[in-house]
Every structure is written in structure tokens, then in C-alpha cells.
Image 1 (cartoon, helix red, strand yellow):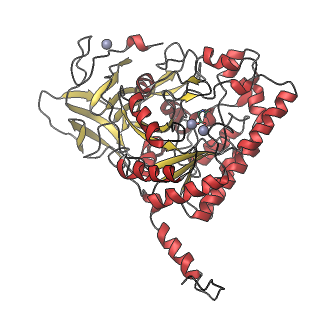
Image 2 (tube, helix red, strand yellow):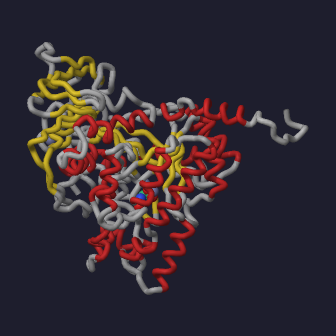
Image 3 (tube, helix red, strand yellow):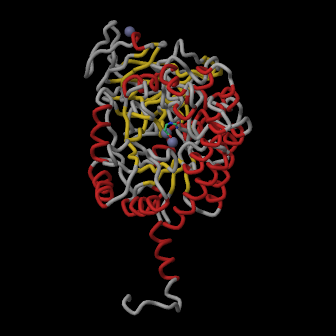
Length: 510
Ligand code: URP
Ligand code: ZN
Ligand code: ZN
Ligand code: ZN
């Protein structure tokens, strides 16, 4: 663990234990290339009290302002990770990165906000949110919540309204896998999608056919395959493609936008491509493990090595990664998450005799920005402005917090990174900031480096050192009816008016 290198300075503003000012409430970032999703230009960025005040060339400021020189570097919005599971209770254990260590790792990698998934308590959303508010108390960066729906009744339906209208939630996730645990059936999906639509909340799905996964797991066990490779073999891409297609068609039937989390396969990606081509509002989120890794290590004879790659849907055979990159570069997929959900090698060993018991999840919250840069920008597949879009801006727009987040504009939150494209990074569990003792990107090197991270106007990562303040992160409420809902009612109206053609009607309805 790298936690001992943090300067924990209690709550509130102040000086770090080592004497370095943790925050100057006024900051000037000079001479960098400021990159937004829509535009890039050489400009200075002036920050006061956590908010960007001005973005202009050659700003003049008073002497008491801390100045950061960004000449020759990119000044970009901090990353927003749409998909994390910090401190989640899952598969008989709890993820080892909590809101403090996971966020510290994020900040060291240039991510300044994440959206985590609240797991209900016995299906109850309010109790779930309460538990997550407690987990998030020590936050050192801003965060928001999605809420998972794991059962259906009047109570849940009412709670969804409270979540949206009072608690800052604008998205709900449905698991189509994890049978006997959190999996939902099509009836629940339909009810849930309808409710999401009426509230202006985005429906999200973990798309794998959980019944078939269960069957596939039994098949492997009957064949005597109990190791980590059984995980991949038991839930092939066809099961992800089927569930993705089903969720897309049900969302189309309800006429509500859909967000498919962790798109891991060509099969799922092609369903999304088809739906988008037909005009349907479907968002596809690849995650960094799916973009840069393949499944080969799952066959490694060393259990510790193989088991660290176990996540769901599985990391796929070589070829899926390149296809997902291409889909991201052409806009078929829109934003990159991580699904950061870390278990150390002792926790992974819960499944040493049975792959079904290996806690599912991989790291990525610290690595995402560097790996997207190296894989997508350095390779020439996307531009620098696209980098900002897929790592930050699109997430802010989808979850309706743009331009407070996801932009370097006057009035936006001062969540900013200074990125040196001529430097380099190298990933190792020895130097990362996650509490896990392993890293699925161990040994990966590439071009580009997040040299400075500013979160809420505070310099939290500089010269390879973290200066994070537990309790300084804010909960970001996300309002309903994002741009994805624009015009949805018009489509419903034209559908209804099409029913005015002569049809047989019940006499009791008008
Ligand atoms: O393996 C994974 N993905 N673990 C986290 C839970 C989920 O399905 O997203
Ligand atoms: Zn220090
Ligand atoms: Zn999932
Ligand atoms: Zn997840």
C-alpha cells in the first residue's frame, strides 16, 4: 500500500504536514494549451476559490497567486470516471479500495470525479444510499451516485422518485447477470425502464444473460474446469450480445434512452452500433480493461496472476480490444469508464478451487487517463479534443452536470489536469496508489504523463506527490432530463397520433 506517502491533513483547507501549502485559493495556470471537447487554444487559466474565473491568453494577476507553468503542456478538464465500485460489498468480501484510497489513486492519475453505484440494502434504495453516504464521508474528490435496482414493488418505484427529486440521482442500473444475487428479469426491466422514463432518469444495464451464464458455469464445473479460465469460458461474448440486444429492444419498446455499461465484446458493440444507426438513443461505455487487455492471462498457470483478470463481462480474446477502440474512435461508443473494483490476491484466492467464487473486478481508476491517451491519442486514433470528450465531457453531459464539470470555462469547477505529452508513464503495483497488491496493467509503459492534478481548486498531485484532504470531496447532485431526453415526448406523441387511424377500440376507453 502507498497510503503512507499521503499527507493527510485532516479536514478543511490548510498546510500539509510536510509544510507544502495544500491549497492556495487563487491559482494561475500559465501558457498551456487549454483543451475542451469543442476547442483548443493557448491560454492562461485563472482559478479562485475552487472555480475557474477566466480563460484567456496573457492574464495578469496579483503577487499572492500561485502560478503553475504549463508551457508546452495540455491543460484539460480532470477525468470523470462514470463507473466505479469503491468499498462495494460483493461476492463475500468488500472491495479493498474505499472512497479515500480509490479517489487518491484517481487523483494521482488525473481523474477528479467519479460516479459510483449505490447497492440497495435488501432492495431498499434509501438504506443503500445512506450506507454509501457513510462510505463516502472521507472523500477527497467530488463524486456522484447511480443507484442499482435489484427488486421491484411499489416501494421501490416510490423510492426512485425520491432519489431523483430529492437526492440528486439521475440514473438507475439493472443487472441482467449475477443470478440469485442482484439479477433482474425482463418484467422488472420493463417496469424499471418505464419508471426511469417518467422520471427523466437514465436506465443503465449490465448486459449478460445471467441464466445462460449459470448454465455455462455448470457446464465448466461438469467438465472439471475450476480455474480462472473457466470464468471466460462460462460466459462467452454471445451472452453479452444477447442481453445487450434484449435491453436495447426493451428500451426501444418503452422509448427511453439506454446506457450499456462495460461493453466488452464485438457482439455487444455491434448491437449498439445497429441501434444508434436506426436512431435509437443508446450510449455504449467501454472500460479501459476492455480496450487494452485480452484474455490470455486467464490461462496463466499461476492463480494469483490469472485471477486478477477475472471480471464480468470477461476480458475478451485478442481482437475485441482493437474493435472496441475503433468503435470509440468513430463514435459508436461514447465515453470510457473503468469499473474500478479491486480485490487483493488474498481476496481473489476465495476462488482458488472454484472460479465462481473469485471476486469479480479489476483496477483502472488511476490508469484510465494514461492508457486512453497512449492507446487512442498516441496511436493516432483520436484527437486531443476527443480525448477530453471521452474521458470527461461526454460523461458530464450524459449525467447532466455540464459545464460545471467536463469543461475549462469561466464558472466551471476547477477540476483540471496539466498533461505533459512528452513525458512517459509506467504502471506497477509497487508505485500505484490503490490498496491492491496487484495491477492488471503491471509493467505497461507509454507516452504522456499527468503532472499536476487540481481538484476543486486545490493542487492535489504535483511532483509525484499526493496532497489529499479527507472530507474535501463534495457530493455532486445530478439533475434528471439530460439532453438524451430531448424530444422523447415528441416521438411518443407521434406514436399515439398514429394510433388514431381506424382501429378496433374498447368502448370503455375514449
Ligand atoms: O466484475 C465486475 N465488473 N465487478 C463489478 C460489478 C459489475 O458487474 O460491474
Ligand atoms: Zn508531503
Ligand atoms: Zn457490471
Ligand atoms: Zn461495474
